[in-house]
Image 1 (cartoon, rainbow, N blue to C red):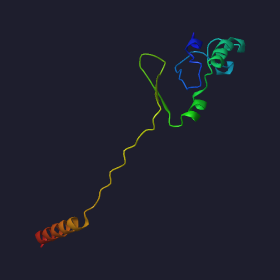
Image 2 (image 1 turned 30 degrees about the vertical axis):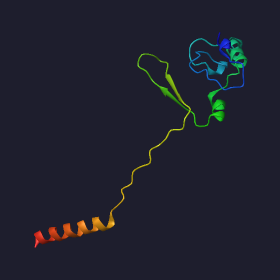
Image 3 (image 1 turned 90 degrees about the horizontal axis):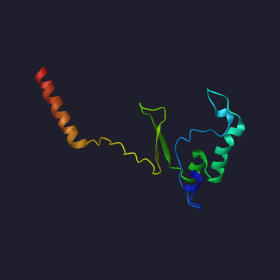
Image 4 (image 1 turned 120 degrees about the vertical axis):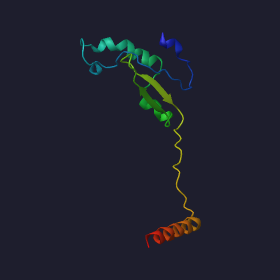
Length: 117
């Protein structure tokens, strides 16, 4: 069924999510053992759709970021894929006003010292 989604052109396309399947028997954790032949239909689908692991796909989209968002209702995680680079706001730096500030500090010091005398 997923094979029908392949656009069949050279454009990049994305098919993401939890396929709830494995490519290699060594990936299996817990439960009944899996034989490699049982992984073959999934491997065939990956090949027929020309899908690739996100690590390889990211070579084409180096700014892509993938976030896994946990939910309380399921053991599956929501995927959030961003293709745009994250824009960080530059930190605001305090620009001192040397002349005005210096004058205010001198006056403040003078007033404080005058009250102590």
